[in-house]
Length: 131
Image (cartoon, rainbow, N blue to C red; front, side):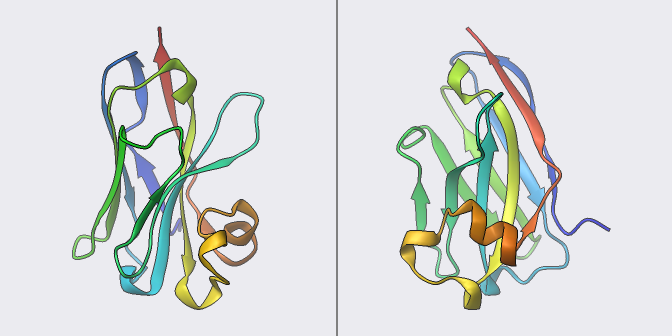
């Protein structure tokens, strides 16, 4: 059984919006850093946004002001609201989680390797943005 299950991807035109959801029924959000990553076609996976156990959020420069990460701890759902989408946002989007105790410092909050080694990943959801 998957620990993290994403939904909400799709195909949109530039300037439109999408909201991604990640259901994490088995996790206690207060114990985990919850993050969104993406992997564009032919490129490496990269961090998009993270929400720390104290609610602090951090964004990649490329999405600041357009994307918003949030969570509903009671429902155990992580969200990524994406506004003013651009063709360069086209990617497979992944939800990921790592325990607070595994986080070595603020420099690692969107480190792919850390989440791969010590955390959990969803299966991904495709977002395609046309010009």
